Amino acid sequence: MESVKARKLTHFGHVMRKKSESLEKQIMQGTTPGSHTKGRPKTTWMDNILQRTGYTLDKTLMHSEDRVKWSQLVHSVARGGTRIRGVARNLIWVGINVN
Image (cartoon, rainbow, N blue to C red; front, side, top):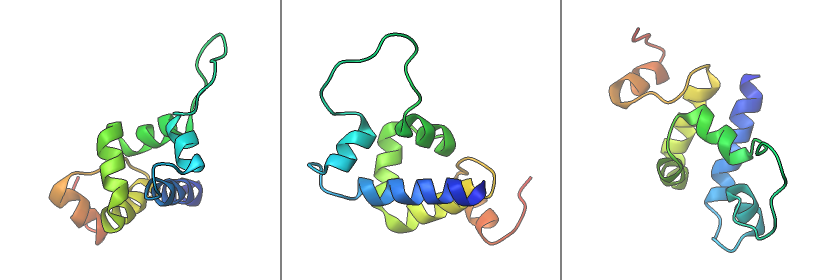
């Protein structure tokens, strides 16, 4: 399951670094025109990414622009957690348990 999370987050970062007129980027962000279906909204890619990272949409998009930060985030999330702030993220990155 970790590899699925990592691949999905890696692909998301790749797509978000594309130009804004990219169809794939528009679809992932849910900005395509059209009507909505009745009932409960379906879980989107963006909902899934935001849930896994624990960040807001703006912060997630900002981090996806920086390849190094995004790579660190992908690895920390794929290892079983959500985002980790500051020093704790760096310590976990090198294998030191901070809990």
